[in-house]
Image (cartoon, rainbow, N blue to C red):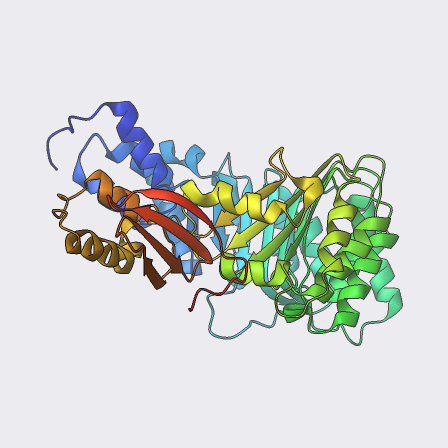
Length: 448
């Protein structure tokens, strides 16, 4: 290992914390310097993924040899059919989150009735589990789903991602009612999260079972996953019929921001009012700001009334909001401009942080190589020397367009230049390469 680093330890710890979700980086940091190892190791064991039962017992042997690391383990992810509650949960005093995830398996596992010894061990040693996540699981029956959920007696947060029941289409109403009664008596959830792939009967079962205790509800509603508009309306209707005595926060996530889906959500929110409901947020997902504006502005023939209905439906809640979730990056410098443009379509939500833009990744200088080349060529053509690396000019270029430049126009006196990009913006530059003004292209098409 190398000598101790010269940076202040506060800076080093922040760097290590920033890498907490990257196991490979933490592993490299732990091998780089002896003084970096303790902090890196603490984060590495905080959230552990186990792919087989052999790994389960290997972890138990490791923790037995290093007992000081046991309190650091807070979360485990494992395949359900590989799970061994004892001795795993028994030796972890501070574990609070458990994830049963089959998404990485080649084929979807079909579960039979869960063995009673496993459920009994969960009841004995899983009392510290507060968060349970079930991902890509198919249960043999509704009873099996209820039995697994109720095995963790102090559960407060339940996340369901693509959860199904093998007898969902043929299960009897008596079986469904029995499962609902058991969950209603013993399940005391405060937070429920479900994606659009959860089967309708499973969602209906949970809505009725937890309507008296849930405070936070996150629901993914999308026709692309739910497959039919009728199914979407049925899901919202079931949500509407529940009592929701303690509900304080509701989030509806739309993966495909289509007019019909937004209209259904607006109609639902108009009637969905409960005494303690304060925070209501709608997530609108899109590939880029360009695609999002096409839908919101109804350029492609959508109903312009839709956005007004959603705007009016949200304004009656104390803390409403719309989050625009984008896959393509948007620079922090221009986020305010796009929020201002989007606010023109949602007038009652302007200001106060009710509109937000969320991106999968941040913008880097390398995203603008094409535009930087165009602008430097124009400056060189008019007798300006090429600026040195990392000059103010290059920084200005790196903070400008977020897409490929499609059009470039010069003024007759060679003092001004305008560029138009795929990101639906137009920028006016001076002869020094500085941004004078930028605005949204109203027709959203900068090809010409």
